[in-house]
Image 1 (spheres, one colour):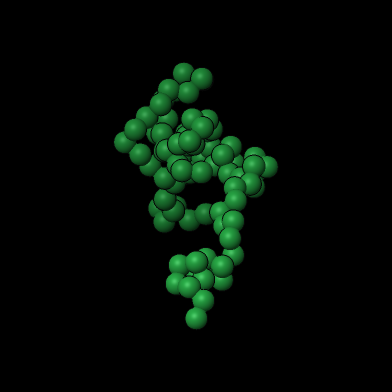
Image 2 (image 1 turned 90 degrees about the vertical axis):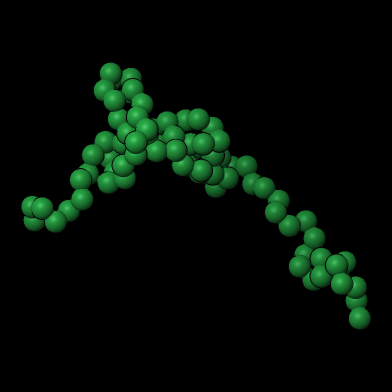
Length: 81
């Protein structure tokens, strides 16, 4: 890689907002928040909405988003004409 043209790539801790699970990886993302990891070092902390720990695809829990079809909901809302 060429020197001086790539962003800083460093260890970062990501935390799932809904489950609280944290994992250490490398990223170019930065944060003012920090957390002390189990190895005693302090790393930037980035809180994210969804990770593999809470995503329905990885957990096997599927959410039913639409119980009635779109056409049925339209008819309920505006009536059948």
